[in-house]
Length: 267
Length: 326
Image 1 (cartoon, rainbow over the protein chains, first blue to last red):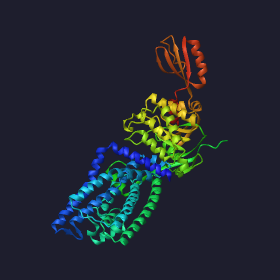
Image 2: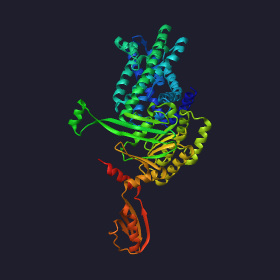
Image 3: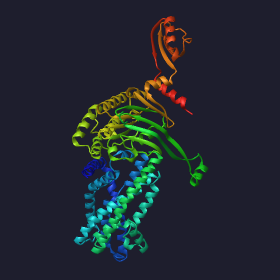
Image 4: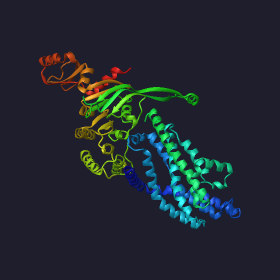
């Protein structure tokens, strides 16, 4: 355990050093992270205003709150592991990970969290600015904030484990970009990034809730916007924990099978 | 007898690769039915290494050297066969096993590209749980032996190939592994750097009693480092033993370098003249005849200087592979 803490701390220092080597690309990447939800926010603001100040259960101000909180949640839970993993397998650098006496997922989680720690404060400042500019209406009860923190952490872990497992498709095929694209399209639609799930047709809402998508982005946003009763929120946390366990099992299973496949084609 | 550090028994690795003829029709055909071909990269090899031994692992490109090293370091599963390294089955990748070995690949990098190598070293310290004192001492020794001091704080991408290789080797040895697999550690390096890395490998082996299995295309590496060599070709073991024995076994000739006063002399009757210039002749003669021919040369000609040599090791190896090619 002490060893893992040490590893996370060291990976943190390494990631920081890497990020400061590329300040410009870091900045550009953050613009992208802001721009996407901003586009949806503007579209929905226009739609809402032109239909009398609300669409379904959302007022214009609630749209603003929704997309701004979503931007932060997406920022915290976002991973780039699917691109990274393909590169590692293709370039054969994964062999080095196999030589190390520690599961490679630890370095990946530590790397991801480290870069989030650097970018999050800036994203929060941007979020506050946007909230003022778009008159976002947000007033969560205190308990909702208490549930939001673990919900956000669980959302990060579940999304990380699922994308880490999917990334291992690279073991079986050398062209994973088609799979990545499909996944990102589903994610965009079913996690509430394009529109709040409540505004989508009922069957789509069911699919989003049965699959992990709702639980990795939409759910923490819903909690912070005060859309749930305490009982609903706790049930949601329970579902996230179930997905966490499923994710851990999935990672173990896929990783073991993946190494065997990697091994078969030669590394 | 001490138990071997590395034990390999009938190790075999078959890759399944898809096979496709050239042309659009073949490409379309492969959509429906993909032909797969089995290729035995390593085809049943066996050998043992004693603790502390340095062994050269030779073979042409595609002979199965890298595949063998990857199986022995746990990166690849074999198709069939046994191996133990320090008593562990490598591909189970037990943590105590991984802490005691390393694999250096001359053509791959483990160092983080954009930042100084020192960061990668620190990361390895955390990964291998190296106690701070051991880490400092080992880093000090490696810095001294490999002359790393001016390199440690430069981003890896700004290092030359040789400088980077030195850092790669240091990163791979910080946890002081007792079994070291080196795959082409000197590839692409200039002669001076090659020599420095050779000296280092000898020194590491001497100081820490490490077992070293090394592949290289540079015979100078092998001659300088390894008394014993293992030769594989097409995945099969061709030779395992002393370098000197290999030379004995596979060469039927010796070369005689002779310098004589008479530049016009015709030496063809003594042996095959490989080259001649300004009275310097290189003759190739059957090994059994060497003594007799030398005697005749000395008796018949105004010899200034004479030297009998085994052919260069490159030539021997080339001959070995030529003989065994299907």
